[in-house]
Image (cartoon, rainbow over all chains, first blue to last red):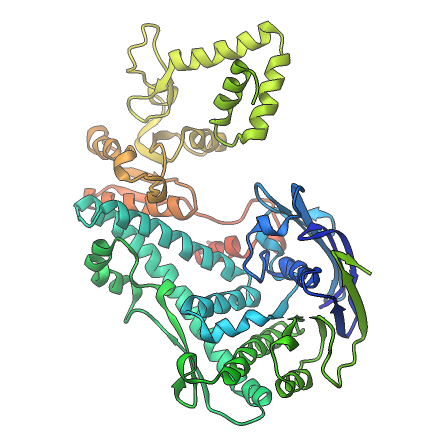
Length: 357
Length: 206
């Protein structure tokens, strides 16, 4: 897959933007802080995941005063020229077009282009709570197979329905509540089990890649481990039955894929609490490189790398190691100015005050 | 804000499903421009449904009330003696009956639940016409129940709930199949639908 051009209309602080992307190698976007460098990457990311990789709500993506933002990109995939277009509306559903034909369902756009995002926030993958790591896994699952998007939203919907029912029960049980809970348990049992299995399969693919990438980035050999830890034992359907009294008492879902953890270890110790700041940075980078490798391996074509201001966060050794091991393919990088030695951009673009110069 | 009656109209329209503030405003100004006769015809139509239409006492479809308006109406379908009274098709809303009727594949009776199990919206089995369905099974000699709720999370949960409730009653319970649109190409089918169609495949008689 190749990305040729990106157009933004009323997206973030851009009234209009037209960004050319180098056909191979590194496209560097230079500009001061707050001028709209990341927004360009965010636009590309939006077409890949139909959301902001910064986790921003859609209101934040639409330029103030405009009813909708448009993100459009020209790409080639398997020899086919694609014009991808997403209209991000303040109210209502997005409108999505491929080669000017509207897609019946917005989520059918998923999988049209793939990206791997590296951002200064990645450190939270290691230092943050378990929800950060689950979000990381789920995003990779959707990129790997768009069908997983439906699985994730099914689990989410069932969880919200079950939580609403538990809350309404007010700690009391009745045959009516029990009967309805039986149904939601069966639904959550099936969907939750499927999601946990998909995440475990992904973790198994990621682990060797994380180990390899960590050694490259850190420059030393270390033992890393990535382990998916379920919040229940045995079949989820049965475990929900056991947890029912507890769930009713607390008025919340106490087990399920929304409570699972992805344990990261370095030299046999939890990385979140025992690794140094530098080791945590290396591990976060290794996680991103690992999903990139897995995606490239399954899709046959490497995703476009989006490197958001990564050098501000990395010391010279790690930055150098990252650049040395950047997988082949297209990469778009933002920076406030300085590039580490040895970087040779194929294209350099300057951004100032919501305009591409 | 507009002058009293105009704002009142906008507010009322805005309470309708699927009508946001902007649409409400647009419709209101359209109504303002209507001739008096047109406007009165609309308001008469609204009054008439409220006076002459209620829910069928048997299946909870929409039904026309008899002249005296006692509220004990039977809908057209329940009143039709040619329909098979032993098979009942359970749907969420009256509009789903219209959809099934268009197929001309079903000649039994219906039962409208008036919704689906949806705790987020505060809808449990008690808010649906579930008890009425159970009493119909025994009272009307029903032998098959077709669960025709929507193929989404809430519809599937409702179907499962009913299936579990019905199984001890010894009545045959079926769920509509989900699959591919007729006349479509496999190439354009979405993965989810195609996956379901595959798992629900049938043996072909050779």
